[in-house]
Amino acid sequence: MRQYVARDYESRAVEAARRVLLELTQVLGEYEEMIAVVGGWVPPLLMPGTGHVGSMDVDLALNQEPLQEVRSETLRTLLEQADYYADMKKNFVFYRNVMLDDGGNPDPVVVEVDLIAAEYGLAGKRRQSQRVQDLRARKARGADLVFKEGLVKRVPVEGRSPSGAMIRAHVRVAGPVPFLVMKANALAGRDKPKDAYDIWFLLKYHRAGLEGLTRAVAMHANHGLVNEALGILSEAFADVNHKGPRAVAGFRELQPGTDEYDRVCQDAFQLVRFVLDNLR
Image 1: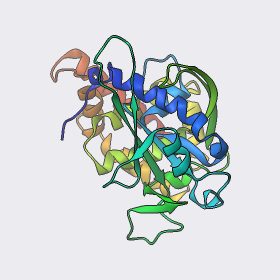
Image 2 (image 1 turned 90 degrees about the vertical axis):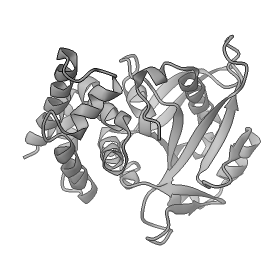
Image 3 (image 1 turned 180 degrees about the horizontal axis):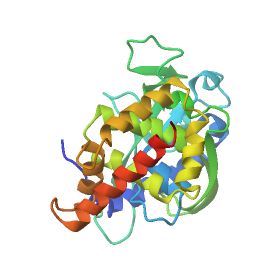
């Protein structure tokens, strides 16, 4: 499986995904309070203008229990009416074809939208997905926390839709605590350097600062999922040569043995250790 690095995100795919994210605020607007953005779009939405690379797909967490009460149309109907189409094999994935009309490749950019839900609740433990209305959402550890009171943020967004029309809206986004929990579990479960980069970026650039973020985590440190995630981070960032710091530097395509590689590894290690050590 290809390992994407930072320069891969300097692409039309990121612009197309951002347009889809903006469009979804309109398409799924009637369910706004039951949906939140998670994954790689969280840092640039929480911290606009800080230089995060963004994401080439869109991850949406669904609060599955209240969503069982259907409003005027189901999620599937709303998506299909807006030209989203389901993956025939991965039933929690939808796609949107985006024509950027920017003088680049004339073919559409295909943007993946992943629907995510908590591990527990309506589905049995063995199932990999939850049924939500007339579709399914992939189970993800930590998604339980996204909709806990005070842990989701509502932020303004502005930009173009896939049609090119300007959109100004608000989007609900996972706050720092559920974001760190979900990214820690992703870091443990797959070999994708961007997971470590996203964690590092949040800790380095969040406007609350390290002390503010540490206080936010401390308020929930007794929660089982939070405590588990802290253990994952402690192992991944145990020292500058462990998986976490090396993945951050690798995502940025820094060469081992260079001063910049060593500096970034040290920075990533120290940021995570600050949070962990100040939770004791």
